[in-house]
Amino acid sequence: MDEQFVNITADNLENEHLCCAIADKKHQGGVAAKKQWLQERLAEGHVFRKLDTKGKVFIEYAPLETAWVPVYGANYLYIYCLWVSGSYKGNGYAKSLLEYCISDAKAQGKSGVCVLSSKKKKPYLTDKKFMAKFGFETVDTAAGDYELLALSFDGTKPHLSERAKKMETEEKELTIYYGMQCPFIKNSVLQVKDTCERHNVPLNLIAVDSLDKAKNVPGIFNNWAVFRDGKFETVQMLNEGGIKKMLGL
Image 1 (cartoon, rainbow, N blue to C red):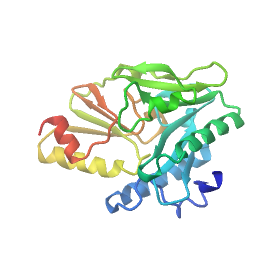
Image 2: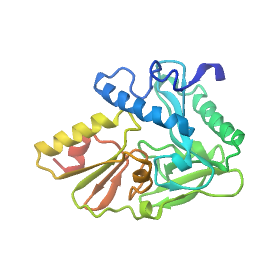
Image 3: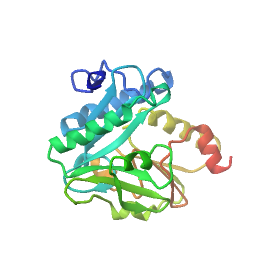
Image 4: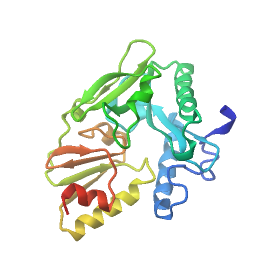
């Protein structure tokens, strides 16, 4: 099955589809931002592996030390996203992609692989039940059923930052931390900003544009984190409908 997949490299980045947002024109600005972000990460050992087709079938992971998440640990790989959608489900692609990541970690002499998840399935987070089939176990937790899962090869364990586990921020207005790691983010930011402006809702948008900022986000963060009244709300990206529902507009 390996011949069906391709890894994004500096040489093929511009010509390969990033399968999160293939055809939707409103997300093309986000795709460009994602490619720029990815271009800078590849030299750090970042891996984006996808099915060689125009479908949403891919895994994305990086060395934990350079992963833009508030997770710490030595010599681990961190999985940002493992996504198999629609008609591609049921073909063993997720299994193949995850096994590739695990094999890559072992080949590099890593201590293990980790990923953010939750006790009950939440949008934009990897499914705990699926990961458990491969030996991933809960090694740290945060309020709201959020969990850090790890497959350890040597008994060591990564952990969430203490600041992230507090799940709160000093800002009392609606506050959103966002990166450019996902092609959908740019459009989500525009929709949230426009909706809040039209309804006179105070909004604090915080661009997570460096590794240091990502490691210090005060809550669970994979590329997006929402706080309201100083308390963590969700990692789910919001469009106009989502923000209206949250705010009761």
